Length: 348
Image 1 (cartoon, rainbow, N blue to C red):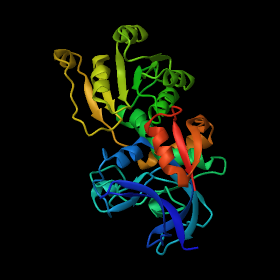
Image 2 (image 1 turned 60 degrees about the vertical axis):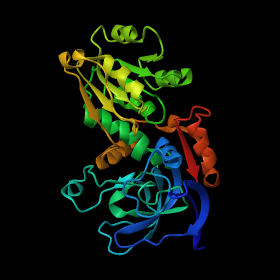
Image 3 (image 1 turned 90 degrees about the vertical axis):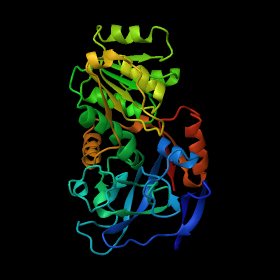
Image 4 (image 1 turned 90 degrees about the horizontal axis):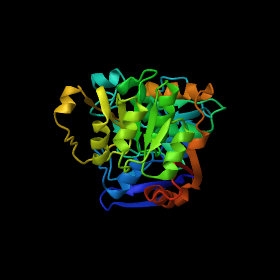
């Protein structure tokens, strides 16, 4: 067999289809991964609807998918790591350009390429991966749970522990309790935040947030919303507000309930302008806004260890498994919130 199925997005025509394509061959420093599970993310939806435009696309057609796990199938030449076929791995959601100082330090930079957007990702039976983007996973960690770690879990993890640096007993608000926000709740709980206030217009999402460890779950449309936040924080306001929705109205509301020295962390992405209309109180209370994007390479390794050690059970995050051939249906389910999914998993 020299062909495979892959979910391909044509950048010129904006058309998506699961197509039969040649199985790629790994080059120097690369390996071929047999995909076992691939997550469906809102970023994938935004790519397909045209609201997310690749910045560093390497061709006019791309295989979608940046949450991928599988086993090493074939080794390319000139590998530096002692990799072996059959090893279970998850793939980092992107890769550095490999040239600038930021890449040497393995930190995000302006030339960070995203899998499934800038280059071929894992909505396929096989995918090419650069060897430095592979994270081994233990036999005890299921492929579906491992697949979502590089984005749905590592993005809020890095936001909580690195961008915000949340400490125990600090108050946290989380707007949007979907695929990223639900994990933001769990990770805030893991580091000892208190209280944790989840904010979502969907009753089912608020119920999920409470099950995932939130202390309060509030409706953002409630007329006494700000009063509820003040009451929950003993009048102090929030130390951190995480926007996991990427919605301008969310940012306005979140900024308004920050306390002294509080920070708004922009986790959700949107091409729309950032506006905060609050006046002098923003200055008086010394509030801040911090941008955040994705996770760091070490985030994935740390989360794999936490999951393997039983500190983080990701089984409740897996909403359903869907055959790769039905990828378009999975996108529709996520886009329209059918069944209010956390993560849908494509299985080749």
